[in-house]
Image 1 (cartoon, one colour):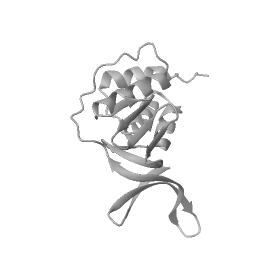
Image 2 (cartoon, one colour):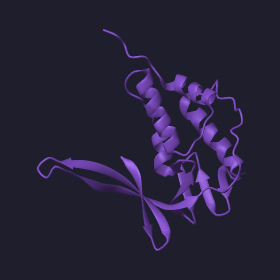
Image 3 (cartoon, one colour):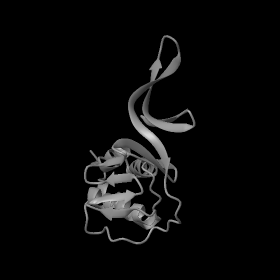
Image 4 (tube, one colour):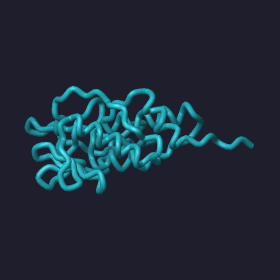
Amino acid sequence: MFIRLKKIKNNQYAYLVENTWKKRKQSSRQQVKAYLGRVLPAPHQKITMSSINIQEKEYSLALLSILQSQLLQYGFQEKNGKLQYEDIIIDLNNKTVTREGKDVVLKMHDGYLCSHSIKKALQFQGEGYEEQVGLQLAETLVGVGLDLPQEMFIQLFEKIYRAPKED
């Protein structure tokens, strides 16, 4: 599954889409699985991912700390346990990204921060060998809109990777 953008009346909207293959017709077809919300650009700030300590945290808590740190650098402010920039509210505890009570999608770097992508990143479980899991994790983190220094990516990877058992 992937996020597809659709432009309607000069506004972009995001949809969760899945491709299915039709053998008889030798063609693929896209099926919309969910509407994710209107796409909004992230606030324009110069982001320099500061070094935050994630050593002692499990994967999901470390990822939430990284997300929070990056959003604060974008200019979001902490208010009542949520992150807010103008009328955009991100609640990392409930994994929601909203504006005026409606789900929205925040375009960050090469990815999209939304309720779906936060949940997907937090539930990440890679399959395969080291390189495969590393690529899957990198794709997931880019998909959520994170741009991490190599050492921070490695720390996250070490929290989730378990070498397959050899027979």
